[in-house]
Amino acid sequence: MTKRQAELGSAAVFVLPAVAIMGVFIIYPAVATLVLSFLDADGTFVGLRNFITVLTHEDTINVDRFPGRSPPWGSLIHNGLWIIVHLPITLLLGIILANLLHNIIGGPVIKAIIFIGMVVPMIVGGVIIRFLFDASSGIVPHLLRSLGSEGLVTRTWTAYPQTSLAALILGSILLWTGFSLTMHASGLSTIPKELYEAADVDGASVLTKFFRITIPMLAPVTSVVVAMTLLWEIKIFDIVYAATEGGPGGSSMVLSLQMYRYAFRRLDHNLAATVATILSMFTLVVGLWLLKRQRKGEGA
Amino acid sequence: MKRITPGRATQYVLAYAFAVVWLIPFLGVIVTSVSPFAEVVRGWWNVDIRNMSLRNYLGAWAHDTMPIGQGIGNSFIVTVPATIVPMLLGSMAAYGFLRFRFPLRTTMFITIILLLAIPQHMVAVPLFQILNGLGLINTYWGLIVAHCAWGMPWIVLFLRGYFSTLPMEIEESARIDGAGTLYTFFRVVLPMSWPGLASVFALQFTWVWNDFFLALITVYHPDRLVATQRIPLLRGQYHVDWGILTSAAVLTTLVPLLVFILLQKYYVKGFVGFSSK
View (spheres, rainbow over the protein chains, first blue to last red):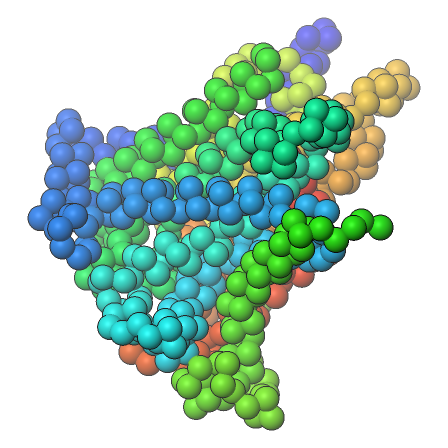
């Protein structure tokens, strides 16, 4: 046996079991889903018909109601709104908190408390959201009442189409900020002190140092946080399932839950596969963007 | 000792204000879980501390229709093998991708990275059909296998990065002494890699324990549901028994919380390392 053959043999022993299990239980099913999205229930090829059906359906985009009337606006719009609200807020909160908690007494404990949102199962996260916005047991309607508010915001947010999506998005900020914070905090600790000392010598203000040193030095971490946050928002499922099941009346429906309902309640595997494929196209765009950025960062 | 400047004082006030905002929801859940239902409906901030008890916990643990105790037992049955097996196979593959040259190596590795971006929904229907064909729906084996596959891409990616930081000299001297690749890997490389393996353990264990979707599509038998599956079923349709629901939530969270507290350093390194490499 030559050295080369020996290396191939070792490679097979080390790599094949993992590759085989991923091939059978991830790659094959993913390809099968892709194929299903181009077929009808009888297995006939229908081109893009399923995609047109899904994308023009009011479950996905409800042009009659968006944006003039209250939700349901369709799952794709809901996911989009989730991104528009949740991404900038968690990103900013993470950067601000990382700086705020840097070098203060109790900082690590506060970081750990905020990170609990990432440790709890997301199904529990959904319960926490429902609890926070409950009319009688929830602190949010209670606080709004004591501030003099009236109407819907003092009732159970998850029970009304006007407020259910807002409750979920706000609650998801509470759960996810710990990720952005932890990533940025570890990024901060890698910035060389000398940069700040040199800036001090030049008489730079706190804000100048923040925008000229901290933000640019954190950029690689920030791009990872943006990508992971986008992936999370696109795939969001558990907290919606636990808090509202997409309701009431589809007002908090999201793509992943729509897919689950098509597949496992209506048993329409082709439309379910189509929704899943649309989901994957979004997540793959994010994944490819991150991959490209990382390769550029490594200089390879 | 630093001087207290107005800027520094503001920093402290803001930092602790944020801490309070984040603490309140979790505090609310814990207070509710030890309070009688009649008091919670008036708001957990009004409860009488003298009436607190663990009755809700007993009620949730041995619930009539959805005992969370049984769910936690089932979650352990699934999570332990679904953590150990992918750690073993994933670490071997990570080492293989790093140390050996073979055809399609780069293509396979890029594919594995891209698998990280695919949602579980993309595999749901065919995965159900495969497991159903194998008679593994409603068994722990089906769910365990699904988790083994699902955890594999990031474990391979993370550990390949980790192994690449190890010094080559030790491995080389083992090889010069005539050790085979398997021996070198299990007796030399893995023992040196325990911090990386601790990160993998912490995160994979937490992800499997916290998973809901894979369990939802593979396990249907009421007695076999894992802990996370039972929580939405304890909610009730019209009237929510917050005491029972929050105790079940706390009990289910206790395990990943303990993993986080005990392995915090490795947990965070897993997060940061896995995303930055």
